[in-house]
Image (cartoon, rainbow, N blue to C red; front, side, top):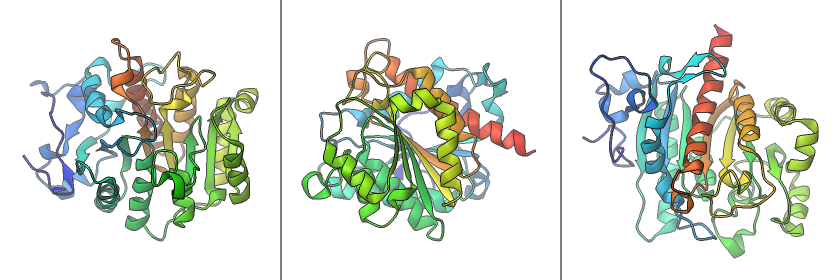
Length: 335
């Protein structure tokens, strides 16, 4: 069955059976595919919309991140909708799976254009929904944000990024790859460097010229060492306070390589010395509670590099559900 978003977006490759009783307790029983909605107007009330972005040909390192959207959906059965830590049941929210952006087999430029169009379409139709992009490599972030900008051109956008890397490589050398999304957004005029905040940089995984470019453009960044001294939540809240005074919309991007290799082996550029799972989840929850955070993505998670017990896939799904928890907590607080 095709959705009303066709042909820009393909419906999910498979759907889970919903319980006949109508009662749900697991994530795979709860999230509905967009094809289950017969009235497009009805769908506009969804709190959250998922958009799969299965692209990794634009990665500068060997990557199977294009496989994550499907692995993400298959992991849902491992999670309950109830979050014990915050005493909330996510099943009270309406979450729709819009499917995957169509990808060209060989033309990366066409893939990126499709992502921009799909992002613009989703943000235009779901005006008040939180849009969650499931990547894909980090090049998708620039395209998702450009689509958001097309859909809402009067809104000023800021970025909060969890990452080991600056992702500010030279476009002339690297093109629109997973090493250039932030520079892409700066050079295209979509997001100002001073409205970018990067948390989690560490170790020997960035060259000095990238730091110099970040300083030149006014990018705000916090190494993992200084973040730990200040505290993850405190650092995030500082960034949100500054960002919210300057922009209308905050976009969260979570590059899974921010995690230490011990926690997340399934990423293309895994490194030692990164965040713990608990630190990342604490940071994501703090971000998601803020009213100006209206979109997010999870990128650079390669299921093909994960171990048999799939720790990285499960962490990626946990990040998504933690983000939803924050959205629900902010909604409950406003009632």
